[in-house]
Image 1 (cartoon, rainbow, N blue to C red):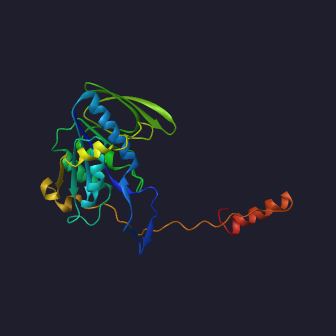
Image 2 (cartoon, rainbow, N blue to C red; image 1 turned 30 degrees about the vertical axis):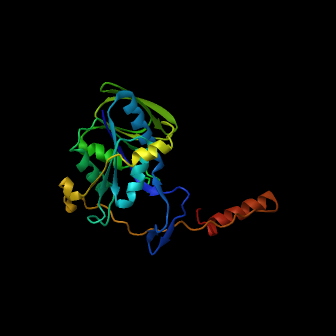
Image 3 (cartoon, rainbow, N blue to C red; image 1 turned 120 degrees about the vertical axis):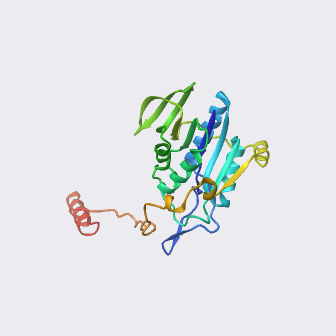
Length: 257
């Protein structure tokens, strides 16, 4: 079985985000594999171990993303592909990323594609479904269980705290929700083996993709941090006076009524 995992390099969840002049400053910041993508990697390895085949992790970015790909290889993936867009694309949105990934995947013999449900930075959850649409294959999002029998697939997906059971078939793209599995930590032997596993670097020219065909459809106008929260206020006095003061504050200060 040919299994592909879409991986994104994101800020460490403990990293403090700094915005300067409308841009996110990432100098010296720590980066990790998007946590939801770790569930996808773990599930891909589990499927491979059960059904045979090969797991290839794919990402878009610059050479800095090699570290995250090597981590995925240390977890147990077989191969990695870096599509380096540093010299070709200044701006990318979900359309751009999906179009580039689909351009690579449409030339592969794909049985199963896994991705994280969302990325913790943008949180749009668009890339996986867009890729599936571009490839013309089935897709199911936010899955919490995956069972494969031949080309038949049984899936349980999360639907706002409840569950939905879906039957579908390969080829298929799924996005992983928290609870699908427990991602493994790279072991020392895994880290050593990862250094020898193949990591292929491609550019848009290698995929016969024209920059104009993947130009971003959206424009980021501004980036800013939310305003700092003010300290809470405790109202005192008789209950009727507190209610009157609360209504006044909501109307005149918070301006929500």
